[in-house]
Length: 256
Image 1 (cartoon, rainbow, N blue to C red):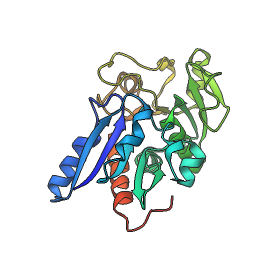
Image 2: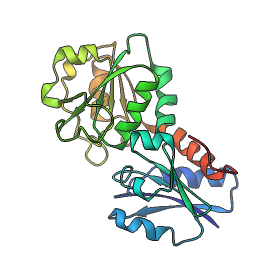
Image 3: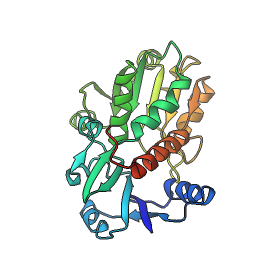
């Protein structure tokens, strides 16, 4: 039985296991299973591979950056953005990929309008690095927003940081694309939301929250109340999960 799975901590509300179990059932895939591996520390990572049936893993918070030293073959994207969310074992080597970049870009593009030339990226973790990569690909100017802007500059590839306390109405008005990559508002903490001046949001804005549980976070509902278009991260997750499956089942490792 081929094994695949998800590492992170905690994993009590993971999307991936339910997605793949349903996929295996619908497509009559009988030789594979998908398990959750809620490892408390990255030190537990290497022991997972003692199971010779384990062929691939997805990576979520807080390990998208911490797994990189364990990879023998990180993709060029992983090397560039220093974030990995998909691993394949091939010939006893671990190949690292980032399918977040594909999922985010494909799900965002249908919502983009001509006015979406400047973006705010809320957060500075592994998901923020994937969003940054896409902004560069789409030639959208962007700025990071962080609670600890000064201390987080080494976590992503650019130094254009501001703190939440520096956000003004004019900054919000200029940056008509706002992407939340932080866990603020994720179940069960549904009353949390990034501290931005929501009153400056208008119908010219598009708000993208990478969170999918709940389906409409407080961040999104506040934006919708101001007339903005909104989307959550569920479609992105579906796309990146399908990309992971392609990577795991390719005859030879995919070049990214």
